[in-house]
Structures are given as structure tokens and as C-alpha cells.
Image (cartoon, rainbow, N blue to C red; front, side, top):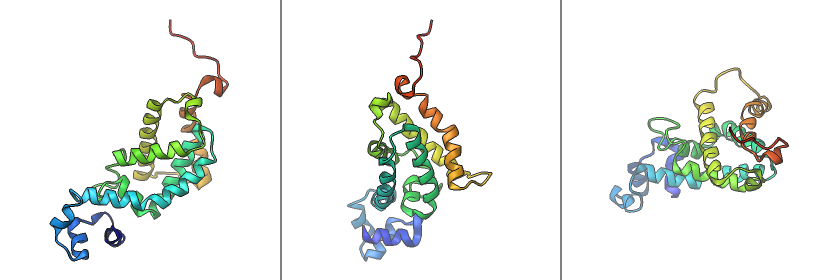
Length: 192
């Protein structure tokens, strides 16, 4: 995997099994014994390479017990740091050869999202957000991140302005699902 990391540092998402095999001085079929294709090789490298980023984000999320605020912080931190995180770009974009974000809701990205939610300081069950709803929340959050990465748009915002923007528009969406008792709202009425 070390040689794959070197190739990724040099070539980014254009790295192929041929590059890694050449750098190792072995044949491509030898690499194929371990990885069925370039995407599998790059995904394995990206999963390993994102660990430092994920540890930093996890430390931030552990201090947050509000569901909406946890999602706001996850989006802000990811969007602000992805330009300097080549492995995160690789993971969110599959191989990166065709589109930066074609794999934003891939199984690997969802697994990472699930791990981060589980490590947040939020008691998801007590908040009333069920496991099935958390899966939807992961998908939705990944799609929000994708949107900001594909088109940062305008106006330009400082990190704090970006955080405030998400607190106004993203956090209330999460809050709408939170247990009404915890949120201080009246119990929902049954439809007639």
C-alpha cells in the first residue's frame, strides 16, 4: 500500500494498477491478485489515507450533543478541508478520472458517515432519530457536501459565515425530526 500512496501523492486520481505495478517492479497480474481493479485499489488507499482526517473530525464531533449542530460541523469541516485532503477527494470521487464526486454516496462514503455519526456526542436514539433515519441523514449530508464542492457559488463566506448559513438552513431540517419532547415542541397530532 505504501507504493500506492506514493503514486496517489504524485498522480492523484489518475493512478492506475499499471502505475503501482511499475513502481513496485512487478507485473499488473500480480497486483490484480490483491485488487480486482483500479477503483478497488484506490478505494483501499483512500480508506487508509483518510484516517487522520476522520480522527480530527471525530474529535470535533464528540464534543457536540445536538444533532443539527453535529451535522453543521461535519459539513463545514469537510467542505473546508477537502481541498487539502487528497484521499478524501479520492474516496468521494471514486477513481477521480471522470468526475470528482461520482462516488459521494458510495458504500465506502456511507460507512464513513455512519462511523462519524456513531462517534458524535449525540444520543441519536434519545433524539428520536431512528437508525433508518440516520441512514437517510447520512445520504442527505453527503449530498449537501457534494453540492458545495461541485459549486461553491456565491457569495464567498468565511468559515463562521458558512457555519451560520448551515445553522439557519440545515440544522432546522434535522431539528424537525428530533424527538418533539426533547425539542420542546408539542406532540404531533394524528391526521384526521
